[in-house]
Image 1: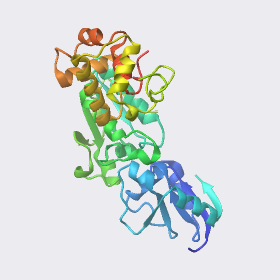
Image 2: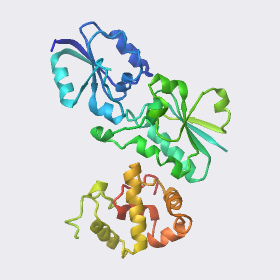
Image 3: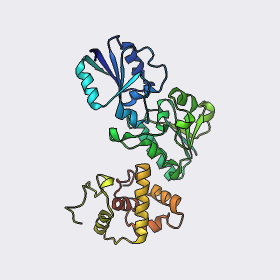
Image 4: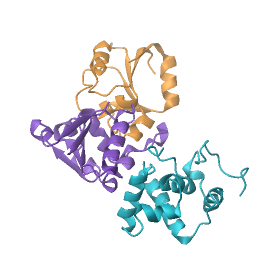
Length: 95
Length: 116
Length: 108
């Protein structure tokens, strides 16, 4: 796995002002980790179109909300996977 | 007197929607006409197939299914917000009416109260 | 069933986990309230167990408990006098405790 410059952990829904702020701050070598309400972004077509890095989504939060991601845009990860990502990133921002 | 309780926050992320649901149930307990409206990220309350065991919460989908038993008159959802969150008719739980939320709708109720 | 063998409970005697409930637990909990469970009690207990499986919530108040019973079984059983005779005190609280459900949120 390529190393991540900054992992952005986003728990806000696409309707929340901080959601857009997070997207604006994403750099080309950054990754986005959607958790809690943030996973709702997997349903809002196009809202993440500008993100060039990898996008992860926390599986228990997807399942809780009745969401399935078969799209290759989103990589589902479990809690352990998320912890692993935080150790691989040089920097972590929790939005 | 009729009340419209509006939930515009996504499920599971915080408690505001559950508190509003509790308020709606309490109004219904005293036979006060009450309707629930889901707006914005709130429409995600209405998606079928929620399984929140992994985050140790109770299913808001199952909680909501008690609404008609307790006497809540209707479940309304903003049609455009449903579309924004990829919710087609078939993805919605039973008994939801999709509406166009404008001042017409809000004027039909004596009281309108937002969650949170 | 003794206090030692009963599943974990909170300070008001409600089970911590509704899924640790068995009919034997109900018999033991009812005895604490001085109740001998009849078929009429079991009918309501089974109703509440089904209700919880389907909705993952206890009827939040006494009024909504009565309303839910009425919706399911009609006026004859869904009225507060009948339910109070079966489950003295606050019927929703007493019945939910015996049925192993969480404490109704809006009962004092």
